[in-house]
Image (tube, rainbow, N blue to C red; front, side, top):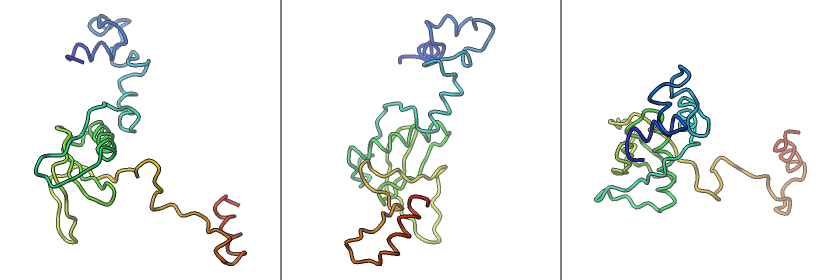
Length: 165
């Protein structure tokens, strides 16, 4: 995408003439843009994390932060959602580490220490990154294995509760 004209072409779903002329008397942003979705629908999908810009997030040199490529990918998705929500400086908890993310330049600017009683300023959004793919969320607890010598009635009760019975 090279210019605003290209963006209008993409949103109009055509070569840009409909965007310039307002074909059928409707706003080009509500006619059905990318994949038939209106601008409002696209913005909603971006807020929900369903649209990705494919723009990377980098770590600021000298920040003292070391993140894996997988963590940077998760932060890029958070940056997309934050931008769609209007946030510009986000405090992110990723894998039990708090980092500051500058959404405009898509850069992790440093770590954040959350000390009781201290105020963390310059932030307009806070988010906890989803867990890495293939890892179990800390809030998920499975039913104990019967071979552990636990009370069988307790195991039965837990299994019924887990399946909603």
